[in-house]
Length: 117
Image 1 (tube, rainbow, N blue to C red):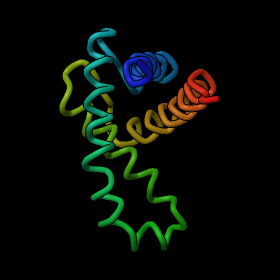
Image 2 (tube, rainbow, N blue to C red):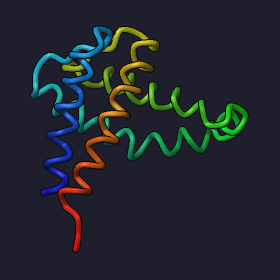
Image 3 (cartoon, helix red, strand yellow):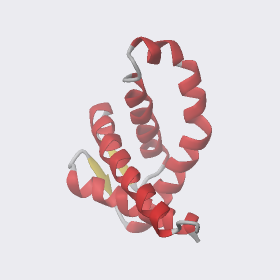
Image 4 (tube, helix red, strand yellow):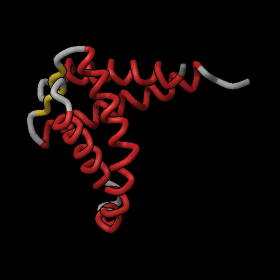
């Protein structure tokens, strides 16, 4: 139940990013659902490899290069899903920042909702 709710809220977060920032567009809620699933899969499979490969640069930049890695994942998801469009790397960077903040709020709320006694 928690996974389905997180997926639905992630799709809503993508719609919110498109609403808040004009550099990111989402065609429909179905497109947002597919994009959220692809983005989640990319973050689960590809992102750890990129973080490992870019570890020296990440250390040199005191972790700021992880923003670039997040933007690459966001941009890659837009390239794979026709329902999500990102207007360049700068839009991917800002869109991924907004999406990350919304995901942080979603994770916080879901942990409160499904709190184990």
